[in-house]
Image 1: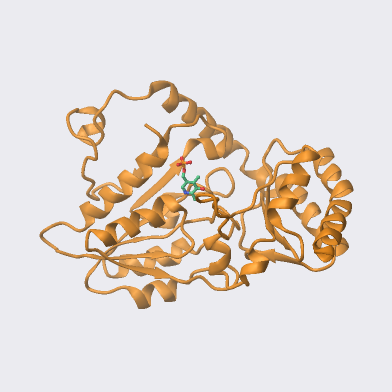
Image 2: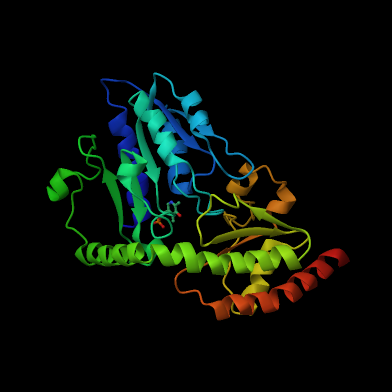
Length: 319
Ligand SMILES: *Cc1c(COP(=O)(O)O)cnc(C)c1O
């Protein structure tokens, strides 16, 4: 059972729980930059008759508490907004958003998968009712994740036919996964200072080098409100996929945010949500650092990147 499935299922069940037959509430609020596990789940709920508001982010990828407040209605059953974005790293103001929800008693879930291990996450400070996360994003084992549920908040079981976890999740527990996730969570917690200082320093070193030495580049996401490990940057006239290929040839792993659905390369929904033009969204790549990234590696990227970009731009001009 993959965590992705756990996510989709649990969100569905959180949604189902919140829209109890008694209340008959059927309106949900989310954003247009959610990870597919959340976004696609809401699209599915729409097929089942739910009304969903997808709040649009601003050009830096931020969503405000005011936007959420304005979208809340008597019919709103649940708000689900990510804590940190997986493509551009923006950190959303969940504390303020949750406060708006609490004012009128609407349940709030946050997908904190990209935040755990990168920034401090405290469910009490955030004031959310539900918080989900996945172990492999903080160097834990694959195939395990977690859903925090505030005491007293309802949750329906999403598998039936077993009494595990107080009847909430039937099935024999994945003990190695759970223990592995616990150890990884402790290490992630112990490493938060390192993430905020050293990982950020290395990310900033790469970012500043690029901004200062390579012309016509565009940083995606909010420069300040951003996870310390993420750098999403577009190089004008330099196709992202081609750049990845070249970087890969140099032993450098980067990523385009774009979902490579079917054979056709679609540009990233998240980047398009920022309002950047479609051509430029194809030129964005994401460098993700971690506790394992070394200064030597960053210096190496810095030493080869300008020539790679120059070559690709020459090819693109020649077209
Ligand atoms: C990776 C990710 C998920 C999905 O987690 P999996 O365990 O890989 O399915 C959900 N949300 C965000 C923000 C993610 O980055």
